[in-house]
Length: 116
Image 1 (cartoon, one colour):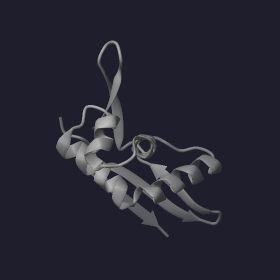
Image 2 (cartoon, rainbow, N blue to C red):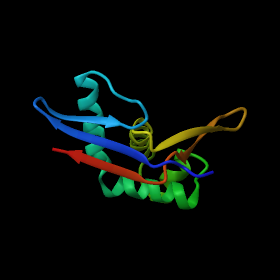
Image 3 (cartoon, helix red, strand yellow):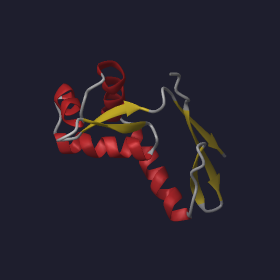
Image 4 (tube, rainbow, N blue to C red):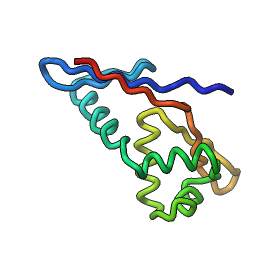
């Protein structure tokens, strides 16, 4: 199944930066600033490594993802939640008794547009 690219539009207005996501997200100024803060924190090597491993290794859980990355589980879980909030990944429930949450890419590309 082909994935759609996630497009984030950042606009600079008289009140500062505002982030709009092409999939219908929007909201109050406080919500926009929170999303912008999340988008800023997206652009680091650890988040890039997470996305790369999810795409290529397809780990069955966040715990397995953390093991592959050689990172602390809680830190990886926190980073995954941020990636989920931005719409880049989602979690699939795996198993019947003890449910694992498998991270899956929702988008295969991120495009960021900044308007001045």
